[in-house]
Each structure stands twice: as C-alpha cells, then as structure tokens.
Amino acid sequence: MRKEIKNAIIAGIVVVAAIAGVATYFMSLDKPGATDSSVLTQPISSNATTDENQYPVAPDLVGILGYINTTPDALKSDMKNKVVMYDFWTYSCINCLRTLPYLEEWNVKYADKGLLIVGVHSPEFEFEKNIDNVKMAVQKYNITYPVVLDSDHATWDAFGNRYWPAEYMTDYLGHIRHVHFGEGDYDQTEQTIQALLSQRAQALGLDINTNMSLVNLQPHQFSDQQTPEIYFGYDFATGRSYLGNQEGFHPNLTVTYTVPSNLNRDHFYLGGDWQNLQDSMKLSSDNGEIVLSYYAKDVHIVAAGPGVDVQVLLDGKPVTSGDAGQDLQNSTVHVSDNRLYNIISSQQAGAHTLTLVAKPGFQIYTFTFG
Image 1 (cartoon, rainbow, N blue to C red):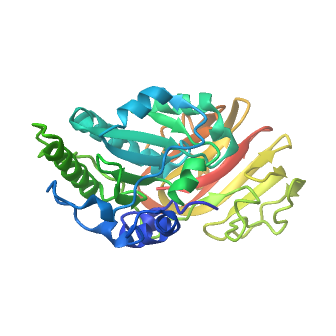
Image 2 (image 1 turned 90 degrees about the vertical axis):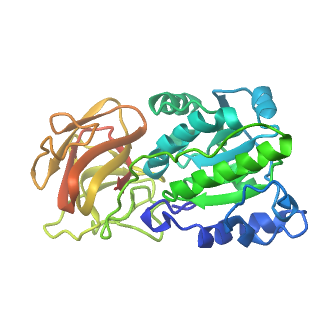
C-alpha cells in the first residue's frame, strides 16, 4: 500500500515504528524538545509529577467530514481533561478489525475513569469514504466510542501517520505519550492506559482506582510463511505486483486473461475478461476465475458486486465446513456490500490452491491473510 504496512511484520514493533512514522510530525512541532521521539517508547510511570513538556502536543482533528456516535460539539467537550486514544483505522483492513475487540473492552473498562477512544476512520479505498458504509461497519463490529471520518486524510497527515492500525495516546493535557503501530502489544498498551489515568487522577485530585486486571483476549497468531497481502489495482500494486499472468496490467483497459498450467506461490492468476482499475479488477465476461497458490490459515477478500454469488474451491474441491470462513456458505460467498469477506478459516496454516469462480460485475480489491 502507498500509505501503510499492514501485516504481521509490523505487529509488535514500537521503537522503530514510532521513530520512523512520526519523525516528520515531531519536526513540525513548535514545542521545544518535542523532536526526541525516544520518550514515547519509555515506560510510563503513574507519578503525576512527570514533566509533560518533553512530549509533543497532539494536533487537532482537522478536515473531519462526518461524525458517528458523537457530534462535533460533544466530542470537543468530551476530550477536555481526558486521556485520549486516537485509533487510525479503516473498515476493510483485517489488521484493524482484529484490534477492535480490545478497543471496545478498554472503552467499557476505562471510559468512566477518564479514557476517551476516538476512532479516526482514514480510508484506503474510495468506497470507504461513504459514511453509510462506515456506519454499517460501526454497527457490525459493535463500536460504541466516537468515530470521525478523516476521508481526505487531513488528520492522518497532521499526525504524520503512515500505518493501519495506529494508536496515538495522549495524557489528560493533550501530550502524545505513547504510539503503537500494527497489531499486538495489547498488555503494554493497557498498562499505559492505566498509568496515564492514574497520573490524571492524582493531578485532578480524583479518587479513581485504575489498578485492574488486564483484558484477557486471544490475540491472532501469525504464520512465519504467510502469504503477503495481494492487491489487484494497478496503482496499488506498483512495486509489489503479484499478478502472475503474462498479460500483465493494462491500466483502464479490459484484458482477456488465461490461467497458465504452472502456478507460482503467492501469485494470483486471472481467467476471463477483467477490467484493470486503479484500485481493483472487475470481471466483464460471462465467466471468470481467480486462482491463487498461498500459505496461510485464514483468507479474506475485499470485494464488491451487484449481489453476485462467487464459488470458492480449495485445492480444486468445494470448501468443507472445517475450512469455511464466516462469510462462506455451501462453498459460496454472496458479494454485495463493499467490504471485507472471510472466505477461508482453516484449523491451521498450510499451503493450498484457492479458486474463485465469479460472475460479471464481481470486483476484487485485495487478498489478505491470517
């Protein structure tokens, strides 16, 4: 992707990512000493005497085009004297979706103790700018904290962000005290929440106990050999093309593709007439197929269509219940909404050949894996 690294490699890295991802932002701040990004990776003490002036002040939410679960005035009021976690996400990102249960648990545990989570929805694809689509996702994933639509990436740029998901956490005075990119390190993040809430309580003279047991959820387990995320749009695939057909990409043209006899792992192959779009491929012929040799446990697609049924085959056979993803029924996925669909969820990671047999109008943006 042009603006993110959204895979297992970044999961759990804090030190390197914090320095790289926010360096430009730090350098643009007026606050003396704010360019020292190493302070964001140091353990946070609950001591209220910490000198906050060594930390950068979070930029304002700018260019917001919509509000969900809040209003502009209510959000502005709610942010005063709160520990704020800004979560940069987008609803078709599987890595973002896997962090949502933790965010919602923290919201339930700590909202009344001074934590405010703000979901900053910064889209990757054009369809993710539609507020109705985002509202659908907020409802589907039971998000109850405020969500703002950063559809033009104005707030994303103000923070100097480059990753989905990304968390920026401030103390009650608005200084950025903690940054984390990608999945993982949930215990450390929650301990930071507790420390900042304790500092807040001491400074404001509040009788609040934040010494609580940590959220106990099962984090996603990644495979060492996992196939990387695969993009179908010619613009998104620049520099990382996994299209295996010899016909290649032809921007804005409809190309007839033929699946070859020999397949390379981690590459996709098209059969039929496919329109090459900037962010996706769209089937134009009466029938078409996509063949992929991959290694993973879970397979997701980001796709759209006019209510089309796509047949899914695993190693040339209909997908059994033991390998079926939550959006698959009778080896078929019904594609209508513009969103992420989970089509394969095996018991363990392994090497397989996946085949999608599609109908006209089927549009696919990415394969993502887990």
